[in-house]
Amino acid sequence: MTGVSPSRLDDQQLMKELATIHRTRHDTLLYGSNDALRVHNERMAQLEGEYLRRNPRRLVSAGRTREGARERVCGETAPGPVDRMAT
Image 1 (cartoon, helix red, strand yellow):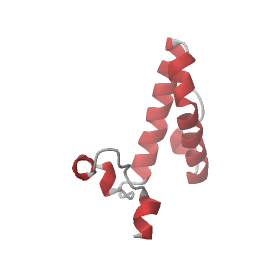
Image 2 (image 1 turned 135 degrees about the vertical axis):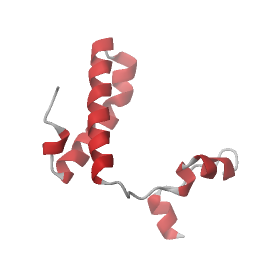
Image 3 (image 1 turned 45 degrees about the horizontal axis):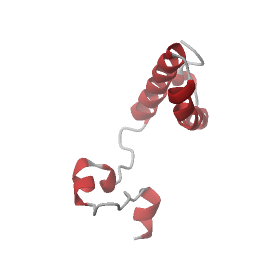
Image 4 (image 1 turned 120 degrees about the vertical axis):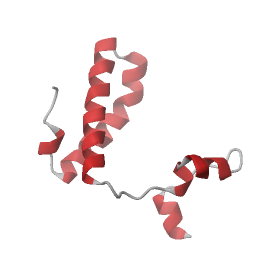
């Protein structure tokens, strides 16, 4: 495994690692070797899995579900948690 086990990261470190891996995803997909993409996929799955394990009741935006997506008008973006709080 590459990097510290996600279970050993505190919440702040986990969020920092998730932000970094999501930020680098596009470039890895477009320009990384097959091996780099495989390692990136594995690490992202580990980090995301740990986040989901710690946050089983995380806030889910209705617009980010299949039903919510069907209800959106063509071209409309899904509201995020901040958008929903304002309404």
